[in-house]
Length: 398
Image (cartoon, rainbow, N blue to C red):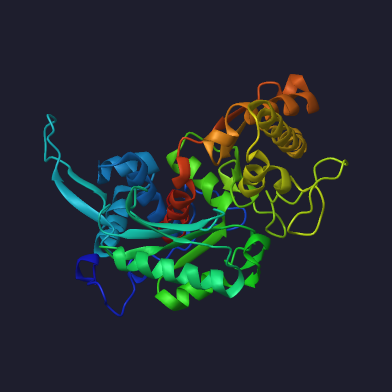
């Protein structure tokens, strides 16, 4: 059965139609396939290789794909036939060619054939979601006010928001992607999200059981750095600091997401910065980075302040961020850090204080070239990163 035969309300989920390579956000796996491999695991890899070529390059002929990938024309033709049967690739007609011989038939990814639901649970006041196409364009939006709800009440809001978005989709769903605050394992279990009162919440399985499609759940900062990699300007080595309800970081090294042995890589929000005390964090410690930098805490400190006092608050927050990041920059020799969050708070004074602190705490000859910039993807970065997670898991592309 092809995608054209899938009707809304069918008992069979759209996730049954794409090739089920399910390479996902696996530990140590690069996001993008980049060459043929030996037999054994070849079929799934090569299907993803063809899809990745079309996804990034657009319309191609079978011969074009063979040249780019190094696969034989016979292999490419067989893979394309399989992908067309699954409704993932379409023939677009013949290329107008001045060369002699039969014109090549052009093919492309069926970009309108499937949609993705993305959720962003990282904001302090609302849960946000969207229906996206395969290129990460947002087709429909929805949100629900959090209103300080935690635990089961917060989980119920997630399910309600997802249901609204699934109903708003107009094509079979490739899957659902979720960016959640806190520490999330590779099975989509939120091990801990203090701001939401979640401990060992099996969010991925809960949504999969509820909606009958493939679901991928990851930390919101990890989702955001994937969006920067696929839709922004980040290269294969990148660190993105996401500032919202909490503070976290996503890391890519050599195009491979870094999760850590206990899935807490980038969990910098609950690192104590400095030895001079500070406010008590929701986690119970005193002086965590989150107490200086999270949007609720930063907004509260800025409320009613004079311009000079406002700058002092932002400078201190930037310095605390620099203190937390300096060992990471030193250890990984990063050249760029990306900030994601409210531009009016993070850009300018705060960002400059962060850079100055980093440069004063690392070796200038190796780290003096470090740059720090705001993401250009705005508030939709986690939503688009959620789409990347689904694309990577279902199709092996990003």
